[in-house]
Image 1 (cartoon, rainbow, N blue to C red):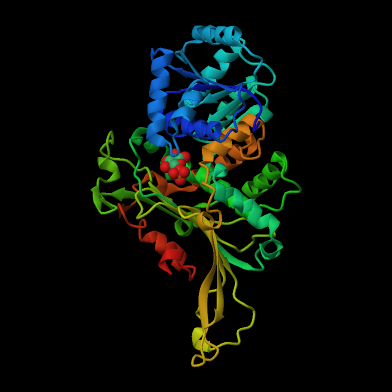
Image 2: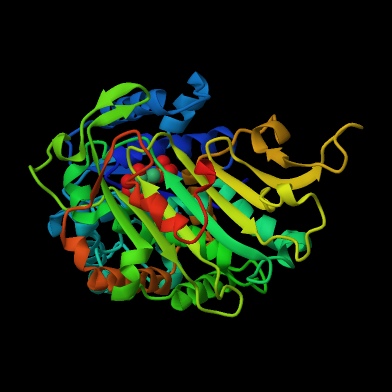
Length: 488
Ligand code: BG6
């Protein structure tokens, strides 16, 4: 079968993450035969539900959030699911979990998935250990955010480390499970064409855009305590940066890859007080429109307080101080309520060293590699060719060498990130998960940025929902004689 048998214990099984992501992903693994027949799912939640009712609600969530739902597959999937009511914050309740395992035990190893607020990670871990629910092989899966800063992430990591070994802790950054993000590794290290061009000799600058059209989606309180820097940059965006900038690992083993990513994080130049004014732009959306529909501003969202200095948009210029990347800026922008959902990376190559064509065409774009993470996953390499025809002489024309995954792999659906991540946890492969030192180095960089950023305590620049952030983010890149890709 596709994966070894396990008992997957989901804390927070009736919550949002489980309904929208985890059960749909597990269902898809079941549907395509990637779960071993003996694998079971134990759903844990506070609600007092019978097993039948819990299964019914899970089935309902699947109907809402799953494509390819087939009646017989759904029935056999739900048959794997058991339900146990448990108040996670009460230590004495964990004996019932232990009893469940004893009474239903079939020798499967346990995997605990904490789909709960991070404040519960510490208590759950302690109570599991006290109730003797863990052995030396037990795995645990935790979601971001791992802390709010370096100190709190260390505290959280310490709490996990008391019970679980690092090689059994799976810290999820769901961007690492996205098909195209993994493709970065294939693109860079399976194609010598790029490998030999991937440095400051050949690349002038890189853009990373992670744009969302949604607002804070009912999570105002959480988001307001985090902001776009902590919520998106510290995790997803820095992971993308690491995969783009790291040196070739000697193999695909988890630690070889993660060792290289850590080197990038260590080499990230701190944003000193002087640099912040030219390297960082913070924004917050005001009322505007999304897909033509009027939407409220950040401060008018459900549960919003009347005022807040939290940013919903960040543009920054990151630099990596090592031989490979010296002098190559990485322009990053990410925000909520931007005109569209779009994540992409643009690698801009330097111009040819000597130009021989028509001088009035010298402005034509240099080579660019465009990596579209979502939507419309694919890649395009912008090259210059000769314009066709007798009349045009040696006129140049820019055009893409295009690879759209949906067209190239027509019969394959693109799996959701959680499908791959859950499969790798079950297989016991950590290469798509974040190691403790990665999380901590990422926080160290974010912490120094915040410590040096006097203006972070003041109100961010405003931008109307449905626009590309504050105009200052355009100025940030144009001051270097460049422009964001879509503005070009
Ligand atoms: C989450 C953030 O980690 O990623 C959210 O907390 C964000 O704020 C989400 O909306 C974006 O993920 P995706 O996969 O939709 O790009």
